[in-house]
Image (cartoon, rainbow, N blue to C red; front, side, top):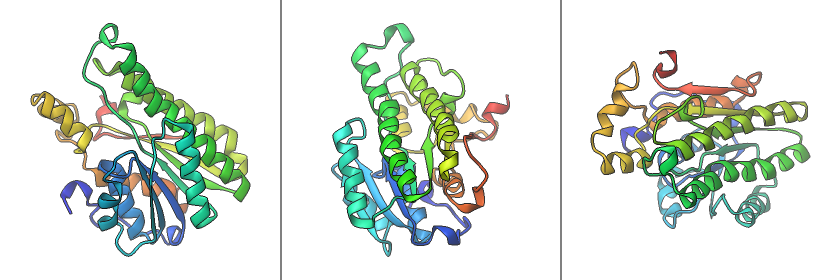
Length: 262
């Protein structure tokens, strides 16, 4: 297991044992690290990703846990409905949903982003998160409660030059999170988001491969002078999903080494 997937001596949460946890974007990065950590917590996992290598990726990290892997494109409502149906057919409920799937786009100023790129990024990162929440919330109301954690970004808390479509989508995810928290708190459902800065994930590695100078840019952007590890983000996700955060609702938690304190 690489360092980027380790959560170290992260605490164990007894209340997550046996819970059904849905993770999207599960084949790599933060999603894969989340599968590993929820499995360590004793949860039953529903792992979803558009990647054809989903099963091969998640099976080793979820060893010993109950696991259902479902190929799905969260930007397509039929796929999201099929994903939820598969999860419910296996487990009858969804206690925790980690809406993590997302894509990046090539660096371009706002006037230079083409319409197809805009539609694709918004379609996956924002519409896809909404579609997942739409069906997860419906199920959680029916079963009497649950917890949702969305993966937003520090790009959802401020501007980020040359990442306009991504920024717009992640601001939207933060807005969906806060609105969902307000609308569904009375049903025993908590909705929160994590807002990581740049982490050592496949997405960031692709960006660095295209422009190697970005590695130092990303590191210098944080007061801690480094990127996050996926496990550091996942530690916050697991806490938000657990009863230890039982009165935390509607929050967009920055995990950025202090970047937003500038």
